Image 1 (cartoon, rainbow, N blue to C red):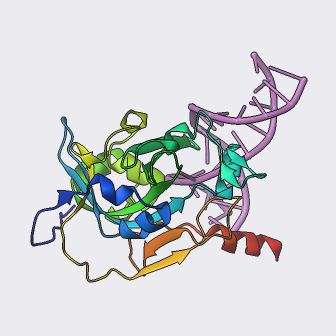
Image 2 (image 1 turned 90 degrees about the vertical axis):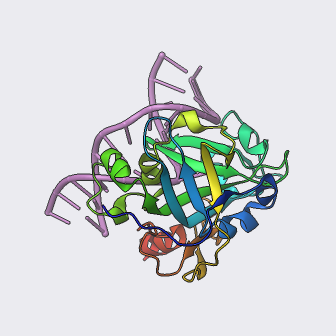
Length: 224
DNA sequence: TATATGATTGCCT
DNA sequence: GGCAATCATATAG
């Protein structure tokens, strides 16, 4: 597969401060940023983030994890959610339906929050990504979904807790203003709770966005 | 210990 | 469009 690159300055890691904000602010701001994985035993993997979802401290979506207290309307710390209360800018990696998903912890310490990285446009290390993504027929399928993204970027539970503000795994900004950065929102994908919240952010019309259907649209279809 | 569930994916018609 | 594989977590018993 052919590698693409963007001209201009080299990308530098996003600092801690970028992530010490509400997940709702961080999620759209991550669009257009780079995800970089410098591996010891393989080529550098780079992608441009085109789709994210925010998960907040008062998010009913956590009811699906039995980690939401309806009385207070707040996320409850459990074994699974404890690290969401930890320092921002760290990786929060968990498994669902047998697939690893990568999130970035956000909000001040003590306040739970994170941003799910759902899709990226592959920019470097495409052949290496394709080796792990056996089912991918085109370069578009390499990382156009949260489980595909972790597979392409060679990430699993070992990455949980990693500091994403420095190598080997980090998020970066090249300082350039992307010319296709038209951000739109929707309901999140694959949820049974909190489906009314417009917490999904993606680049309008970008071909590397995941093919999933927003949860509110699905629910409406079922009802008819 | 046993069971139900889900922030998914890929293959099927 | 539908559907089943897949596995860690939470909860019940």
